[in-house]
Image 1: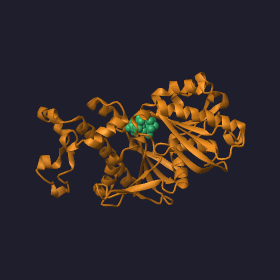
Image 2 (image 1 turned 120 degrees about the vertical axis):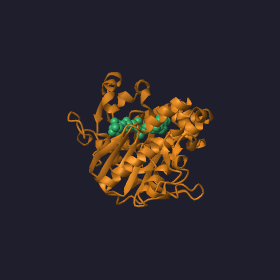
Image 3 (image 1 turned 180 degrees about the horizontal axis):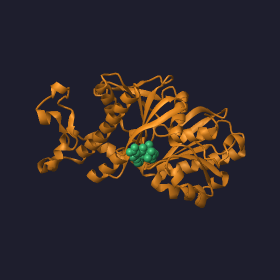
Image 4 (image 1 turned 90 degrees about the horizontal axis):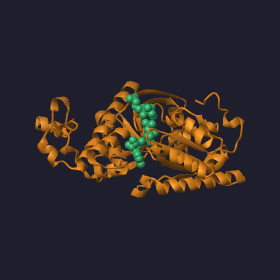
Length: 372
Ligand SMILES: Nc1ncnc2c1ncn2[C@@H]1O[C@H](COP(=O)(O)OP(=O)(O)OP(=O)(O)O)[C@@H](O)[C@H]1O
Ligand SMILES: CC(C)(CO)[C@@H](O)C(=O)NCCC(=O)O
């Protein structure tokens, strides 16, 4: 939804700006469109400025140093306003927004554009800062409408965007399988960011937020930092990959000695997350890796369980999981894939998307350019 006081791009200037931002509770996502054939000096200078900002952010970000680079940093041959070009994807911690604004000033970005299209809570929270620090106006768009529009656009432009995990619990057979998302409705969209929002989507223009939970990606990272002393998402995921949650959780078989067959509860099911940790002896044996894994399993299974209940309530079979919590996180994706399939007797499918965290930024850029 466009703010009433902002004039839509279509009616003003068909050239700049070509970038959109999604300013979330943890990460800010910036996408910019680079036309293939540069026709105007103005476009070239903006792109050079954005490239230098991108270079700076990649070099100086904490995640840049860990070696966990995003694999999808750009997408070629997309069309915006009838122009063929490349979409570039950048992200940085929202806690560094002040630095970003200083950088935008230093690199001359502020001189080129007067209005930036933005979505996410930060579009509201930082509106005054943008005005004061760089004299930029924000054209604000709703985060969920932007998510949906961005998702549909990226899927249309990338034939390998949507996939599911086959045999998610079998280490040797498990693989990513392409999924044709061209007739997707109805579906549930589960956005796992700092918190989790669950949307029921009935068409390209019809979506409603049906549920949410504050136990999301921010909770995983926050608890992991507290429990293991780690300092980044990548480190937390790295620890979790080496850990065993059964040293931390209490399983059905720890209580029953085996399956609870009468009610279909297998012995390996978690009966109580962190349930072993009330024993001093157990606590003394558990590793940082085990704690990280148990935190990941706890948060992910809880989200899976809420998503499944929403899917039943909304009578949908396809559940699409997105958000940066799923970045470099195959453990969580496979857990979700398994949980959705197992508990629905294979009637529900968990789907995933390659550009999981960038749809909001793309969607607001599209709306600004009237590409809806
Ligand atoms: N480099 C990273 N730094 C911090 N968190 C990361 C990183 N990579 C992935 N994450 C995970 O992604 C989550 C944030 O995801 P995302 O960017 O989709 O949400 P957000 O927009 O910041 O939050 P919200 O939508 O709730 O405002 C974090 O809570 C964390 O679990
Ligand atoms: C507040 C938002 C919508 C910001 O994106 C998100 O973090 C969220 O959905 N949190 C969960 C809120 C809840 O439903 O409990």
